[in-house]
Amino acid sequence: MTMDNVIQKQWEEIDKKLYKVLIFKDFQEAFAFMVRVAFLAEKNNHHPRWTNEWNKVEIWLSTHDAGDIVTEKDRNLAREINELLLVDAI
Image 1: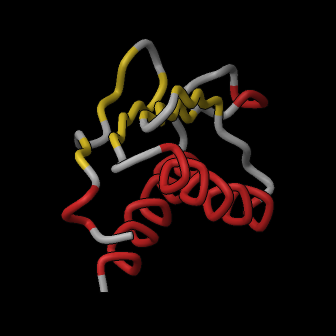
Image 2: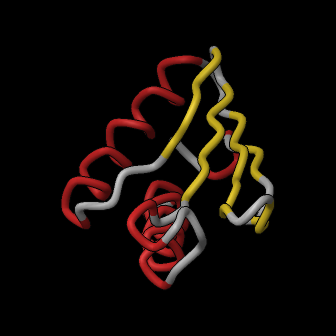
């Protein structure tokens, strides 16, 4: 997967959640990305709310035990997700 194949918006804070949408070349690339994010989420013990429809992945991050708001935990996971996308571009 290369960044050329991924259309993405920057993270936005909407309704007390960090939100990002990504459009991949196809379902396989979208799902492969989700698997890599799943490993990051498990490592951080911080799991996103997300959806996948064919090549589109939407991610929402918030910290449930802090009252469902954006915390440093969410910002850190968002940074790691962004880094994962950069690594894939190499």
